[in-house]
Length: 192
Image (cartoon, rainbow, N blue to C red; front, side, top):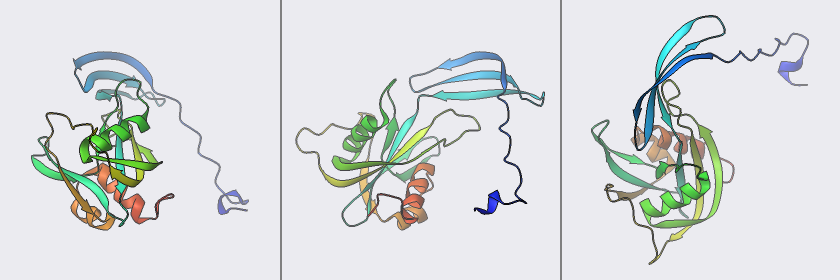
């Protein structure tokens, strides 16, 4: 018997009702995301007006080499005005399968392919204002893509670097990369 199923256990929390959408106005339609202003009424009656970034989703790849190091990319991020070390990642095309996108992004950004793939996690990086859901994959048994390698996007300037999950956890300030490092440091299923 688990600790939560005994006679003194608190009743399971009732799932709250969904909020009621009162209005939605499109403020921006972009190449990568849209922005809407929405007014909602919570089950309590409280009304909120929110600006929400609507995003189709993204993938991130914890590519682990035979030495237990992550294959990463260093790139400039104008939104924060810094060069960041990150796990390879990219957005989903409309209707695209996340693993297909992950395979594409790993090859484009690092020049590598992986023979073994598994899903580590799905999470919302910024649910307070953004609908983006990210799928984090573990990629193992890495090999060079070869002559038919897909090139990275023309507007990307990337440097491939390798470091252990612990070193990445210490250096990175990028959320998806911190999540990847933490999963691997905790012995994620499938990681050797």
